[in-house]
Length: 319
Image 1: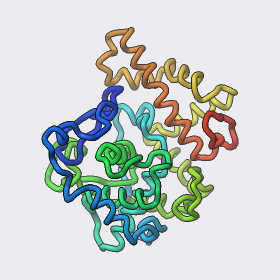
Image 2: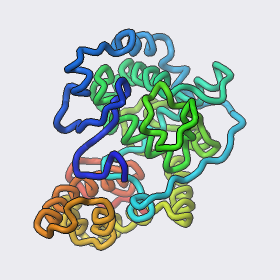
Image 3: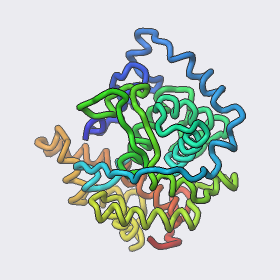
C-alpha cells in the first residue's frame, strides 16, 4: 500500500520529498525543519496572494471542457475496501476539482503543476474559512495540513478516476514519490461532471456538509459503476450502512464490526508487518478500526443517509 502501509499517518513532503509521520511531526517535515529550509517564496505569501479576488471565480460551477475519461487505480486496498481510512469527505476533493477546472478554462491549459494547484487551493480555502469544515486543511499555511489534502483527498480522487496525474519527466516508479513541482495534473470527464453539480457550500454558501440531491444521485451511480469494475467503496459503504440500520451504533459497535470483519482483516494483513505476531496484529486492527469506521460514517452523513449530527446514528435515507 505504499506510503500508507502502516497505522501511521505517513505522507511525502512537497518540498524535499522526504517521507514522515504527520502524527509525530505536527509542525511539518522534520528534515526541512532541521536544515532550516525555506518554503518557496514563503508559503504564507503565496496562499494570501492566491486567495485574493478569486473566491467566486474558482469555486464557481465550471464551464464545459473537452476531457478524457478517467482511469481507476486498483490495488490491494481499493479492491478490498475502497478508499483509505483517512478519506472522510467528498467536499475537499470536489473543491479542488472546481478550482482545477476553472484554472484550465481561464488559462487555456490541459495540465497544471500540482504544486501550483495546491497553493491556489490553499489560498482559496483560507480566504473562505474552510478550515472549520471536515477534511479541509486546518491550517493551509502549514505543510502537514496541505500534505493531508494531497495524500488523503487528491490522491484518492485520482484513484477513483476524477483526476489524471503524471510526472513531468519519464518516471518508472510511483508518480506520488515525485515532489509536487514535478507532478502534472488534469481533470477527467467524470471529475468535471461531478464538479458541475450544485453544492450547498460552494454555490449557496450554506455551511452544511451534506451533498445535494443531484450530487448524491450522481455519486451513488458512479460508486456502483466503479464497484463493478473492482473499486469497492460502495461495497464498504453499504455494509456499514446496513449494520447501523440494524440499530447498531456507529462507534463502539461499529469498531467491533471492523475488528471482526474478514475483508477488513484481509486488507490489513496484505501489508502489515505485524501479521505474523497475533497479539501485535490484533492491537493494530483495534487501532485502525475507529479511523476507518469514522471515515465511512462521515461519508454516509454527507450522502444524507445518516443524520448529520455528532454521535447520532439515526438513519434518515437510503443508499
